Image (cartoon, rainbow, N blue to C red; front, side, top):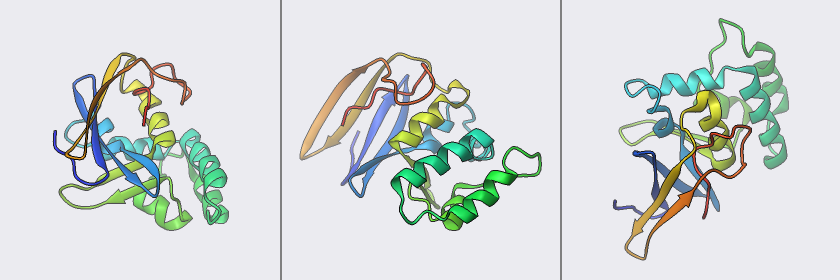
Length: 168
């Protein structure tokens, strides 16, 4: 598969997952991962994950560690609402309100929600979207043609059923 710039693809159990490099960090498409559970409305899978208390706690901790400009007061508001039946949260609302850097959301035909690899692995373990197994990383740019096998998951998240082992 062709890639442009800092974009590439992972092939995970016959599912293509897009990734990109932003500010020296890899961001993986949560939208692509979510298509495994709901091909017609992957954004709903992402929104359902974002509304859970454990996700809000995880994202808040990640942002506090990695983002000196994280808005803790706004985070506390989400944390207090998380898990209630009426609580909804989109990635763009989270980013805008808290100044988050771990999620990226873009609109349009090629848009979607991307997450820093730490967060993406946590998302992939949510509801066990993928089972452990062999995966491939593809980066077919003209300047760096690679295709490597990645065997089994590393322990980057809380689930033994992580999406893939990450090898830059």
